[in-house]
Length: 376
Image 1: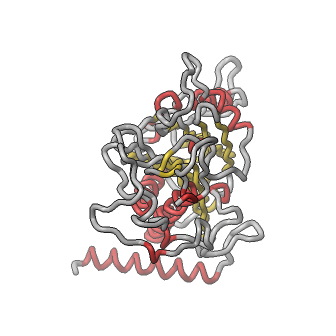
Image 2: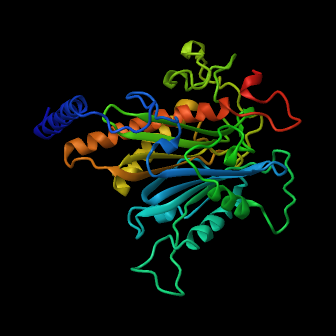
């Protein structure tokens, strides 16, 4: 072992020891009567991360919807794109070399390219409240510029009425969602997941949270519209089963997990390119830089791989955002990088759980039978 490797290893060991000691010495900074260290937050939703609210709206006739995540104050953000067919707007603004460091909201939408119009609705809604990026104080007649990265999943071929002409519903749905934003929201067939399919099963919106031994909170929200399967072949066991907490998606345990290399489970029969996207946001209350958020987003993509088989395929458009609400500070030096790794690892686990919860809670559209997880 050379000197540089040895010193790096010693720094990491020291960071780990310091972190463990601090965890033992300091009571976790957790709010809510049922939060448990090593378990979920009070609601087991991304809104357990302080500073976030979620609103959703859907159009049952069109079988589509929108999910809006609002930050109480601008939040540092990054994005990682792994799928071969993404639909997005304002993701380039999150590149580390660009000017704006923070976002006002993130939008997850149905509707493919049409759904990107939901970002217009939230931008206008926030701008009317004088929120957004600007150079200095507000000047009369010059609006601020809300930063609202938006991604959309493909639900155009699910049988809903998409005959909307020049007036797709997404701008209106987005405003309705924002006006309904709260710390509580529906899972399953709601919001951006209203029109989603997860392999051959009904997809949906999922969310989960975790409270770490250090008191840091990590959460995830996801619209599951994958080509791949979320369950193992021959049964209904979620690929995410090893990460389940307190029976949150059926409590079946991991004993049903087995598959040959080319056995995927309940995949889509015809996974055409560009029609399958899992879109997600992970969040933490730890104050991270944008580069650190980028690393957490990259690590969180592992949660998709743990929960969906296969994932990140040529016909998927998988995208994961990461945001930091900056409510808790972390130290500098080697220990800081250990904390970033800890947050990223937790984000992957939480996203895997959120994916399973989205499908577990999903119900069929009116008049449709035999496609929900509960029907297996």
